[in-house]
Amino acid sequence: MENEYRKGRGSQIHTENPFLKQHYVTEHSEGLDEELIPEYLRTQVFYESPNKVVNKVTSPDVGMEYSLNPYQGCEHGCVYCYARKTHEYWGFNAGLDFESKIIVKKNAPELLEKHLLKSGWRATPIVLSGNTDCYQPLERKLKITRGLLEVFAKYRHPVAIISKNTLMLRDLDILQDLARDHLVHIILSITTLDEKLRTVMEPRTASATKKLKAMEKLSNAGVPVMVMNAPVIPGLNHHEMPGVIKRAAEHGAKSAGYTMVRLNGYIGSVFEDWLKKNFPDRFHKVWNQIQEIHGGQVNDSVFGRRMSGEGNIAEMVNQLFHRARQKYMGDLSLPPLDTTKFRQGGSYNLF
Image (cartoon, one colour):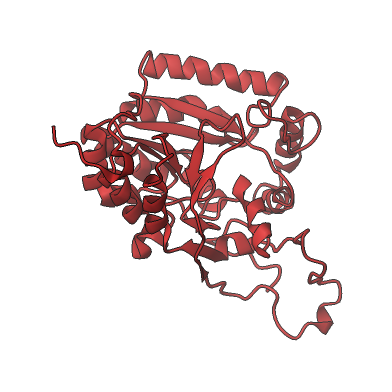
């Protein structure tokens, strides 16, 4: 079954893990007594009990100081996802393992509360998730993210949420409560309006139509929401940017952002395999343009440049973004998150 295309999965391959000394090879398939990739790949769940969950973000170009990831790995299966590389630290691979072996931090709400109760903590917005999606399919059953929101609401602490799903509508009651005190931002990520492209590129995410409806419902409920057009992949979806921003604005989004695709580590192998299998006629065009925006490579790790790219294509996309944002959103912006409502040490203000 090695050559069969697996619908519902982004990656179609297992990649090597650079931290492991041994790995499987298929050069001599007659010596294999079992399939390396089963016909039906089940999602496996692993439970972890970390000592902390709030992480200081040292990267200066991601727009956050602290992040919290209740899950590692992501069933959404976005083939381009930069977080795939982090799965290698757990002994898994950046390919199919990333989207089929999910690590769960069930005690995340308790650890968040413990963190907020520290005497030295000063309210600073915390982002869910920053790495993998806090509203991925498992959240529907496990409700860890809802538990985290309950803690944020209890202590009136600001939080921002970025997701490619619409499950946050389940938690609209808590989000409205937080929004009344300017304590929450929702960032919905829309990569493409082309449903055919979405189903193969990010197969288990919500459709753009569902996300736009969610934006409208959130906005009408008083919850501030913005759109993130990410990643922009030249030759594949870059031309959709004005349409994405226009539709988002029509559905209540107050701001917009974007990032260019970058394929760090073995993510390059995952994306290359996917691109050849799904768009063989466009492979060289897309691959060469990704290399062009990153100085001849498909990845760039230099802060300030890695997510925006450089060169003529990157500049064209940048101009396209700013013109579309000004045309459809004008001077709209998200209200700033309020850090003054925080109940320091759990104390309650009665007045």
